[in-house]
Length: 172
Image (cartoon, rainbow, N blue to C red; front, top):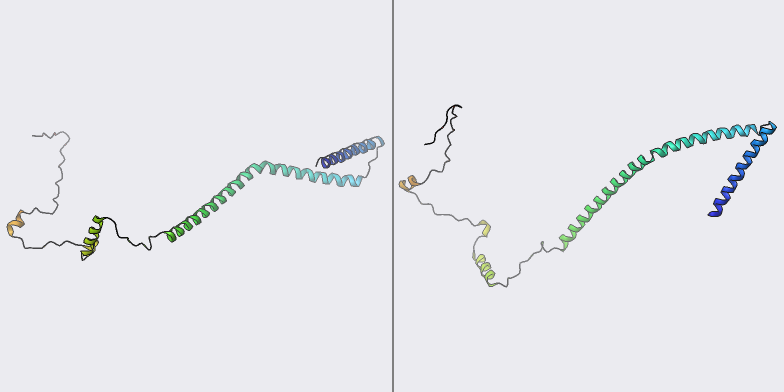
């Protein structure tokens, strides 16, 4: 690597010394060497100069472009990670459903004597506990019983009458 850099530096140095020597000869003799090649080289040098100006202008915008690109890259990677997390979550739920015993649950007989008596008592009932309704016998009531029962309708509250601002209410 060092040898390549050294060869490039020496070649550039020799070319630069050669250009200065040719310019010195031209000035002392008053003759232009290869005017057609010189015009073509000047035009190419102008193009390279414009290209450098455009590149420098673009390099000035590079931090902003890098920021926009990195924002886009971070956003897309966050979306990919979220999608992968969602897929992992769904897979975990599938595995949990496959492994769990909720779908094929069978109740085992209890070792507790109390729980055994409760389960025997439940089995003697005719209806399940959730659908048991207790019905009270309906007997006709006599008139005095009906009169003694409180009325179940809600009573309306009376609105308070507003008093003029100057009058005070005295509590007795």
